Length: 391
Ligand SMILES: Cc1cc2nc3c(=O)[nH]c(=O)nc-3n(C[C@H](O)[C@H](O)[C@H](O)COP(=O)(O)O)c2cc1C
Ligand SMILES: C=C(O[C@@H]1CC(C(=O)O)=C[C@@H](OP(=O)(O)O)[C@H]1O)C(=O)O
Image (cartoon, rainbow, N blue to C red):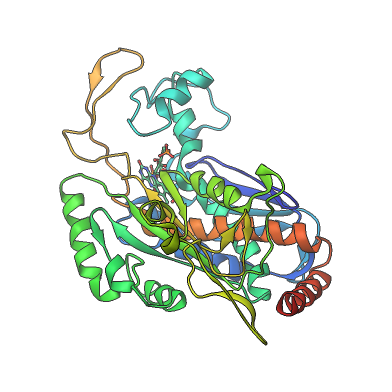
């Protein structure tokens, strides 16, 4: 990252999750209510397991904000784990290991086995506690602070689910504007932009649940109103599409990322793949298509930034005949069903994707327009927008 840095910490069943963000300018209005709205959105979505009934994620702002405005100093965010109370003996922050309730059976598709080998653990709980996607809660909180900056500049971030398993709404949304897709997705229990189709998706998820199965899917995240010129072509690690891809791939269970038409572009002739350039007085340069997904040459080009991500099916399965694995102590094969897991978390991952895109775009904005005082930065962005219009 450039101007903006954040670290997060916390175990899935530990007392709390925290994040420290550095580089947020002074004088940005922010409130815990604003952040909590995003935390709530991440907790929704049909197909989640028992844990989401326990947690009610709420942020405490511990530093960097006074009277509802940022100070320019590091911002500390904390979200308590309600489930911690049920796990104090297992997590035993200051206790001695007893061997009781040790996890020695690595789950396929998880960090368990290789994490145990890498860090030298006999109790694989030491791995899974931190590898868990519970951590994405703090990413959404950090993303909300970044989203507030983008919102102040008239940049809108949204997302929706395109498919779960083999069920897709792709053909039903051709020609529907992005914002409308987003508004409709907010009304859908699976975050699809066609809520009328919700029952079909619910049925599929219910069926998977009954079978002890899990499902993955594809979601799309977009940003409208992004000024051109964020990111750069001059060095490989400054290309914004590269940063976006890294940010999305870092979300647990994401196995593919594309910008705009991405993989679909590979099947087209060149004349059908690129976005022609037009110009109008009072509007400046624009494109009539956006196959590139708003990025050319590693820079935003003024069109909506569009990112898609593919999520694999949740690896923990509840079925009796589950995936085979081998106990790390006894070396005996086991095939154990688990008692709690999400069936699918594609809708939640889409909200995490919004946070990651907000973070990358906010960072790039601060790199281009300065990073001290938000009031000053906003003025510079306005000036730049005029310059672009007149270019
Ligand atoms: C929002 C969200 C919720 C998840 N919930 C679960 C879950 O309940 N059970 C599970 O086994 N994996 C879940 N995962 C996926 C695992 O965290 C992930 O597959 C695992 O840590 C291995 O990482 P990798 O898939 O990126 O290789 C979830 C992922 C996300 C993004
Ligand atoms: C807690 C969250 O997601 C968790 C992510 C997760 C995993 O293995 O990634 C496993 C599940 O946790 P548990 O094992 O406690 O039931 C999910 O509920 C969350 O999203 O806030």
